[in-house]
Length: 116
Image (cartoon, rainbow, N blue to C red; front, side, top):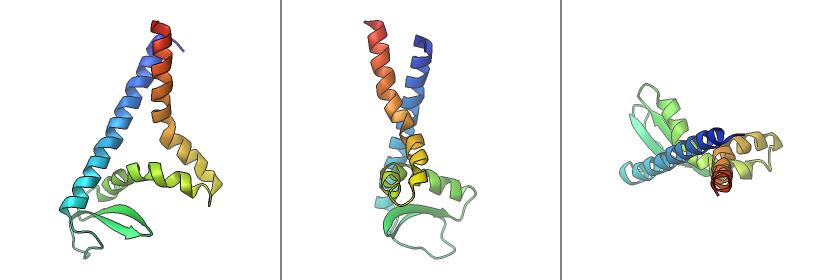
C-alpha cells in the first residue's frame, strides 16, 4: 500500500474511534439523566436496562431501534470477545469491531516508518 492509502486508513480509523467515544459519552449522559430500568410502553427516549448485562434501549420515536443499536456499539466492543466462547462464529464480529482500532496503530507505525 502506498502512503495515501495508509493516511486514508488512519483517518477512517480516527473517525470510527471518535464515533465510538461519542457514543460512549452519550451512554454516560443517559445513565445520569434517565432513570435506570424498564420503562412503560408509552415511554419516549432512551434508557439503560440490565438483563444480565447492561444495555441501552430506545423507544417511541422514528429510528429508535437504530439509535439503540448505536448506543450499544461501545458495549459490543467489550461483550463480544466474551461471547465468542459460546458461539465461535462471533469471532468475525469481534474482528470487524476491532478492525479500525488495530488499523489505527498499524497505519501510524507505517506512516512513521515511511516518513523517517
